[in-house]
Image (cartoon, rainbow, N blue to C red):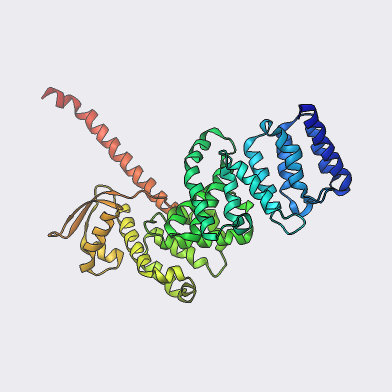
Length: 404
């Protein structure tokens, strides 16, 4: 079709829909004006806003087809090269979702076709979200096969995600969609530590206002459980400070936040108090029950890490007795705790079994809470004073040193 024919067809469709649905006439006429003036950015944003409210704007055409699909095919796709590509992908995703609703809108084949076209380019990252959340509605394959296909797409497109970070102003949308897909997949197949890695990235790129209360609650619960039970997940600080966990306040699951906070502080006794107080609720969480010993070990190791962090860098030779008191284990288990921390690379140093001491030279970096940041600031201040005194000493004695 020639450019003139494309424009004529698009405007005719918009005008016909305006006449067919008088209650939507204002919205369709707004799109007509943008199209006529060739305001392509405003057109994409206006279309995205329009297709994001299916409860009020999704209708049928005169032919009985999905109005979003007709808008996409007749107005948007013919000028897709002139539109913002990420916004185009978001529009396509919304159109695909609309095709999963009950009749007369349902058309799974068309929904899948839209996404498959996106999957041929890097815009497919956004389409992956639909594939993951749409499940059986978008495929005739078994659920296992569908999950494996999603995994392949995630692996194939992870490298593309890094490119978008520096080249697209709206890259956060794609990051959010990608990590939502990866998070959904890992929630289905595990393990918890893999889910945690994807979920914490999803939280970083997603506005909580875009999620329903139910979605926020589910995300906060799953993220908390994954942090507590996931193997190798020791940075509780980044979870505790996540705004997503605030939705658990005042609920029966707030004890998860309290457990994480105690773990982040390395407070073994505090963790045990919370666990004892909410024993009945913990029994309702199979992941916590089945991995109880692993969680206990993790809290013990975090207690050791925090104990080391709280000491000045020049005072990090710890006795076994002090460690036993802090991490609340018998003396004969202290050596195992130290060796476990060394093997997991939570700390670096050397252990003297004869003297029963450990000399720590490095401790795992992690996200700190306000109290820990304040303590660190105080330590920096003390270090600055020592440096200043050393400088003054050198200035006072430089002459004497040079004359020797």
